[in-house]
Length: 321
Ligand SMILES: N[C@@H](CCC(=O)N[C@@H](CS)C(=O)NCC(=O)O)C(=O)O
Image 1 (cartoon, rainbow, N blue to C red):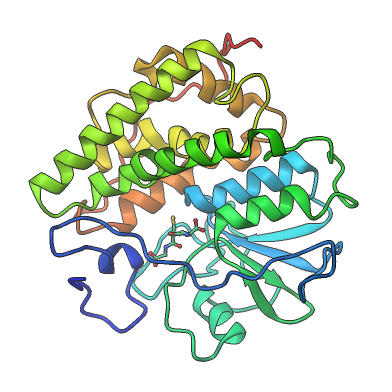
Image 2 (image 1 turned 90 degrees about the horizontal axis):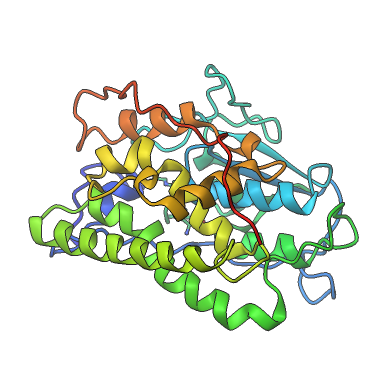
């Protein structure tokens, strides 16, 4: 890895994740414990015991807010929202911007303190989301893919919507398959376009991104959701990138072959997910725009946030089962 950051260990991950060939390579996640309802881990499900630290800007953290909402875990898992600006020192709990909460759990000033409380030797990337155990004062897990799975299956006795299964047994291999290429080429693909430091790395990522979006458009021309008539985690994971796409990725990350509004089925799908009860309130476009355009000054040196585009996620989506 070529480290472009000149700061200490805690340089932003997006500055330190560029390979020698100019490609963006995301860091591995540090905390991977599991909450298990069968008692097999130190973390049993409970109401009021776990807390999420999120950024409204972050597509990975966004997944966890949607899963929490759709499963009906609002009274069970609390959450706090960091400031949208990501300085070199990492996420902060400055609560001066609308939508931020400060750290109501630990009264810390920044997210690094959460990580260092959980593990004083921690030297990895300080990322959101974080699932915090109030009782043990530990981080349970900071990998969004795992957090949404454990929310889906381990809190059934507390969830007000336990019938919703975001990862049904009979669809697991299909969902895993979708997640794999959608993550690689779309979720992370937009970052690979935006943070590439060579033309070749950018063009490769760009080509794969739009080939994958074409593939998604075809799938969604035949079914309401990615795997048919029921919403799964694969849809949530795709949505958090799509809802940011026209406002940020098209311009900021140079993902400009097409916009979401140019793909009829992807547009309908994005609106459909947005209009799913509970989802709209997890989407904060102001935080999203402010975070990307103001934080990544190496690709947007003056930090100017575009006034457009006009987004309309509330128009009829036209999607049926
Ligand atoms: N593997 C993690 C990735 C999370 C991640 O990369 N979060 C970014 C924000 S979108 C972050 O917190 N970056 C902090 C930094 O760059 O300093 C997950 O999916 O939960």
